[in-house]
Amino acid sequence: MTRSISPVRGINDILPDQTYVWQWLEEIARETLQAYGYREIRLPLMERTELFARSIGEVTDIVEKEMYTFEDRNGDSLSLRPEATASCVRAGITHGLFHNQQPRLWYAGPMFRYERPQKGRYRQFHQIGAEAFGLEGPDIDAELILVSARIWRRLGLEGLRLELNSLGTPESRAEYRDVLVGYFRDRYDELDEDSRRRLEQNPLRILDSKNPDMAAVIEGAPRITDHLDPESAEHFAGLKGILDAAGVRYRLNPRLVRGLDYYTRTVFEWTTDQLGAQGAVCSGGRYDGLVEQLGGRPVPAIGWAMGQERLVELVADAGLAPQTRTPQVYLVPLGSAAESRAQSLAEELRDALPRLRLWLHCGGGGMKARMKRADRSGAAHALIMGDEELASGTVIVKPLRTDSQQETVSVSDLPERLRALCGGSDRD
Ligand code: ATP
Ligand code: MG
Image 1: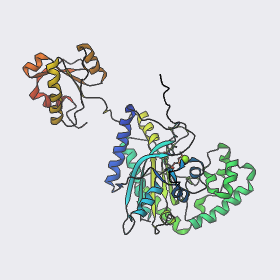
Image 2: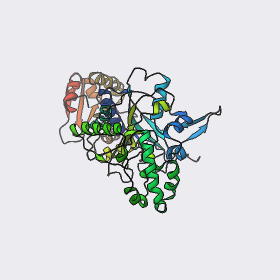
Image 3: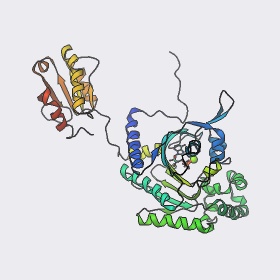
Image 4: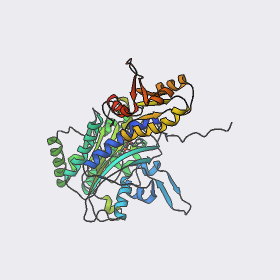
């Protein structure tokens, strides 16, 4: 036998037993976002490496060590996208989407980061994201948070926590940066290697360290919210006011700095403690400087991205996704005449009940084997059609999950009967 080929570490297949949960999550996110006026944008899986270096930041984990970067046959450096905000901005500039418009956009798809694979952290993972451009007030910040909160509600997810912070403007951040560097310099002995390196290059990222040994020194650090410029402080107060009025609970977290360089003012993260270490399910923030930084005119913007793997795990663990993968009926023809009629009968039933989940038995076999497959399909009812039924224009409707009696139904009455039997609706 030839040796089989193993999959790539950290890159998963999503099997049919899971895809129904993915589809349900995607459908709810899509419906909700579109109802708020967000329109889908489909972005490429790879971009010029420079796009990510210039947007996410040279001294970030993502750009320093997590990107899948390669030269194409032409010698251009390309990278698989580690996130999609940069692409969204690039596409907006390319196509003039920001001229006299305030587009609200959403996207979904795989992202690639060379991280250490573990539960909730993969090398190919999926995000659904939303971005709003051209709006600078806190109203849009609030809307983006509210739309995410509505998605959680529609999924039935409870217990997600919203953490909120403001990073101010680049100028106020620079002042804070000096204060922070002073603080950490005085405690240089307590810093781990990563943080010492960051101290020179990107000191705010020290606050994001996941090393428990760093917790105490980080806890004592000066707070960015004590160093906001007046406009950012006002913006932040405005956002909190809207969230308070809308009844959205949040926790202020002055250590929340996020791993990407482009954020300004509002940053937030939805977290859960039901997934162990990988608790962030959705994160985002404002990035007012990014469009200009990437060669466009100055356009304020804000967005978030949710991690689908983590959300799928949450909703699957809680049994929230509806079961629509099993058939409602399994049609079993017996005998060659019935077999040739069954295919057209199945089509007629599908015409009458467009959403009916009907599986037709294919592949022959004895009566016992056919009924066993009907049972294994999970169908609620088997429809049995033998020579006798064929001759009399009827079908036997046999309940597979209850003790109810089987019944003989004429083919012309069958759609009506199935509509009644399959939960009174063909819209499952
Ligand atoms: P984390 O702190 O968990 O590394 P992050 O700050 O790097 O997350 P973002 O870049 O903001 O995450 O991405 C948004 C969301 O995408 C995260 O909240 C998370 O749910 C998900 N996510 C990020 N990286 C991964 C990954 N490697 N595998 C699975 N999901 C991920
Ligand atoms: Mg990360």
